[in-house]
Image: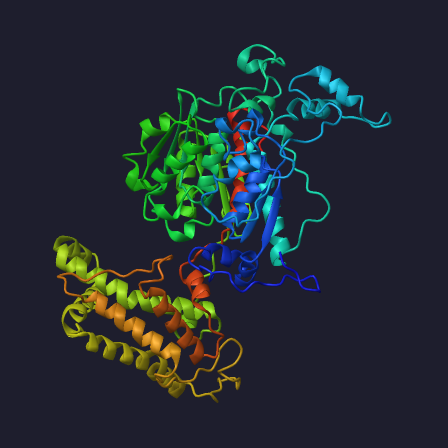
Length: 635
């Protein structure tokens, strides 16, 4: 990375424009300035084991410009269970060179190099202690200072697993390390202080005789010749390849969970199976966090592509892909027979209602549930274990505060207020009328049933809405749509405001003698349409386009609803302009399209480093649940 004389990063000027659609969730988490720093930075990663590949993956997904891979070691069987871009054919090859071509989702630049390809100079014994080898335990203990007190149980456990390499721990450490690299590059957020220690020794089973009626020997855990060598080295239970688990939703956490489960050997035996389901299609904004997907996959079903992608990492994993949503309307699919086959459930859902529903189902069927979620750089995990822990629904977050109607209609004082007002305007103009008219034209029975459930006032309003959409206000040409949009501007930004100022003049005082326009009540001012003003033009343009699309030459109207990741349909252009014009009425600082899109679409910030860390922590808990080991920690 280039630096100026003051040690600050000297920014290059030849970087491609920032793709705000691709990196939208990360921009919401880190900010656009941090993203610009990332895209002009270079990082070298030394060591391409499990942690190294996680760091590389997370930084590349984060949009870093150049990544240099460096490693002096050759791939071993021990690497394969955590380094998911190495294959059995790569054993014996340099790790950096072997996995370099696997990173098909990013440009690494031209600075790749491998130093000292013949390996490291051997020091002392040149290896870690063998798993389950008491002789190596004593040998290593002899190297300790004589006056150093040792926790015998912890020391032996450390020696037994020192040769191991779990993808779960690599995922956690790799996510944290990549986030620290981003901090260094972006100068955004406080770096770690001192050392960060992660201890998951409580995930190891203490008494193996419960499972195989015999104590494991050095030969049992010999780390050679199989994909799961590292798992044997840390005493991973041999029954992991069996069992049936369901993973709900294949978003960012879902992709990471699926990768981890496959590399752990879950459902890789003849009786094992991972079932995954997600009704969503892949969008461009998914690609910078959901690493199982590529640009060519945009528009395809997430579950199908994820199932195909994870088998590249472990061809033995048995996986079944479904494309159904979770809820009461699909209980004919996810019925008693379906849940009877499961040994557990892992959630990666993005809304509370779906989480509560799955929580109730798991409680009903007495199934362990692994729950997780992220928001920007924050994350949470929870284990719901039958008859042991509280369920997800046992605790409830405080409800979000709604914006009072009077604030939205008359007294906005924050940009969130004007954005919500603009979204309501959008729904009232382009969604509700189209839905009602479509139902009237295509489903008369349901429309009449809907009328029967209303009182007289509601019926009159609904029928008037249909008449207005299909007869009174139906445009005959695109010119009519432009005239309509221009009058819409006049109504909301001039006439309504003028009427309010007539009712409550700027010098209005209350009965108590206090100024009416004070505190959170901002005194508005009217806007006069000016075609030279960009926001004025944007509003009329977007509104007229949407109006014209509603009435194109088809027998039915087309429903328009806010698409969170589609900036090509004029929805966000309309909402942004409508919000900023109202903000101008009330002297509120306007928001750009990215900020407006986040608030209007209620988009949750997300970043690959957090999802990797959370997924790793969830899968550590998976070991505890699977081995029937009850020291479960809820984070």
